[in-house]
Length: 121
Image (cartoon, rainbow, N blue to C red):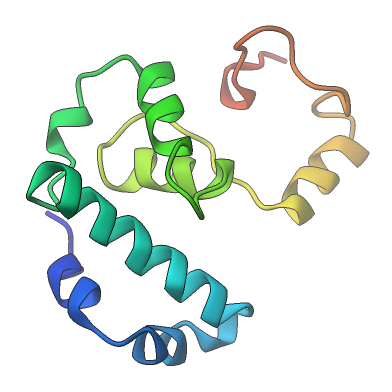
């Protein structure tokens, strides 16, 4: 079960959300994106529940979530991993650079739809 009451987050003022995530940086932009995403999901599906996405093909879910304004690949991968229990590997740019510098993954884009977490040694 999710430990966050997303409906309460959706109803909160953007400034309140921003103050909670302040240490993360860019809190005002991110708070607006969170509210925008939650409001849009409710507007489209009458509920915040994303359970219906759990058994959809992962690439389709990723494409669907990337259509929401304010959601980038890392945010989408976090939603897939934490909310609908898909296998995902969300990393920020700093972690990605370390991985590339250590030679664990190529700096160029991965071929086709190959996902980072599927790269074998």
